[in-house]
Image (tube, one colour):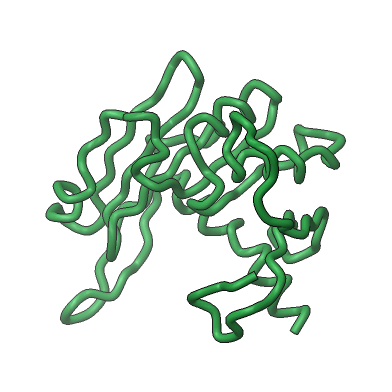
Length: 182
């Protein structure tokens, strides 16, 4: 497969489910376009990964913005999976959050959240160096923690929604696998 932004332009694409500390659970080799399905590729990949999970209450799923969508979060919520992930603006099912541009003009640490009561999905936008959008079906969105960030002239305490700090803590499993593998 040709991968435009990689140092080695041709290679194999692997979809990988790992633990937060880099242990691989399920690996899928990408085999190109398949027959037409009503679910997007990202949703089919995640559902295939999670088919090996036996006890749902011991697992929390963290995904990057390629995989995360409102439809996938609803599907995982119905199946009993706890999931959160960064999300692209066009995958939020027209959620009426404050616009990316408006939030980017606010002070660092500003956040905005909405809760979809019908589907039990929370959407959060947080302004850091850039605006981060996140969907979750189990995390607390109102609790904030503080982190220290560098700003001109020193350091500053910045509010971070709990779901963002939790996501940041557990998101690096695939990166850790890659580090140990090479």
